[in-house]
Image 1: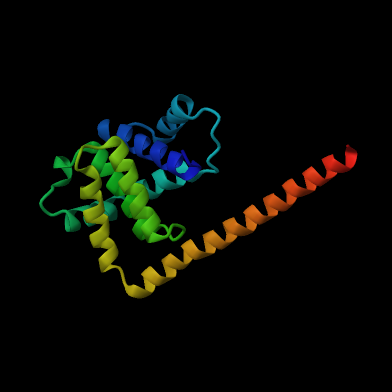
Image 2: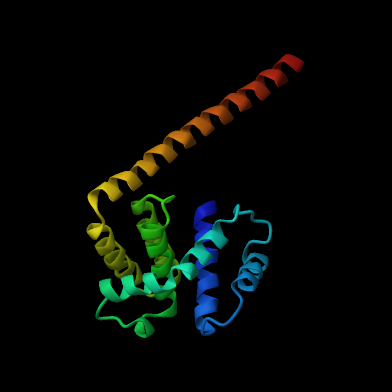
Length: 176
């Protein structure tokens, strides 16, 4: 499981526990417990906290997006899993400028498929896809450029790693 995907999974589990307990448990404690139980050696660089507290700090607006784009589904009738996958997806799609929109949508769909019901992926896709379609074109373009920049940065990092590996191999050959 990729690091960011694992972080999103832990964030969803955290929001699930918090929401299931009527939003009364301490989020930091839940995050700590989830790391202990599911990924004790995992260092996410703070991404889980960023996601969880991003949702928490924008909860009212995020819930309003759900109400607007899933009008046949009152919040309390959406399963706890789907509700919190939507919250994460909406946070990444609308509020976080670090994640390209299609990545936010695809990741939310994958988390929904892994943890939700049979139709969860389609439901999440429908809601997030509608939000994306209503985004201003300039915002879509700006955010999609993130994907290109990240790909270029990853390619540069992979090239640097390959050069380092080749240097290590060359040094080993010289020693032999």
